[in-house]
Amino acid sequence: MAATRKVNNGNDAGAVMLDALDPFFHYLMYTVSVDGADPLFVLVDAGLSGISGDPPEFPVEDVSSTDDVLLVSDGAPHKTYKRRWPNDDELNALTPGAFRKHVLGMSFLKATKYRFKVERFDIDDELQEVLTDIEWSSSNPDTERFESFDINIPADIG
Image 1 (cartoon, rainbow, N blue to C red):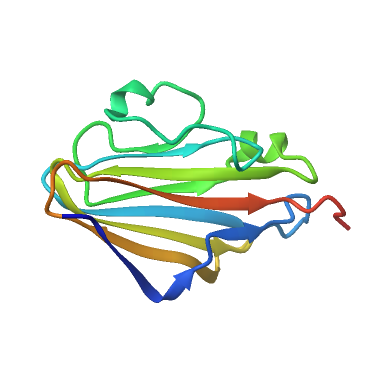
Image 2 (cartoon, helix red, strand yellow):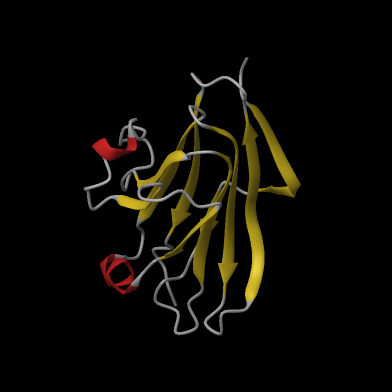
């Protein structure tokens, strides 16, 4: 049985343009919610080009020590995992014209449902919009799925 993908409230942007040098710069909040005994997922920064970079590999422990991991299901299981992007180091490394591809890899070995949400916030931590809100579900433990989200930093900031 394949996994079922459901888009909530039409929120399936898949990409966003962010002006990282704007003094009122907004950030993204990644949220992964899980149903099941033991989630196995990883959210990685797959690179600049948007076409290079391999998808995450399982088991998660194999990639959890790299700098490219943004969020991972290591440690005690939780129902909800969150990650703000970019953090200060990531923000300082962004350059005009940059392109990032973030990829979420999910295994249904011991989890039956994942919800992947990407929200944009302003400098005052006010929610501006829900960009992506997707649920994946499967009862087949052999199922793995990947969901990507692209971030473009405009070259002509100003």
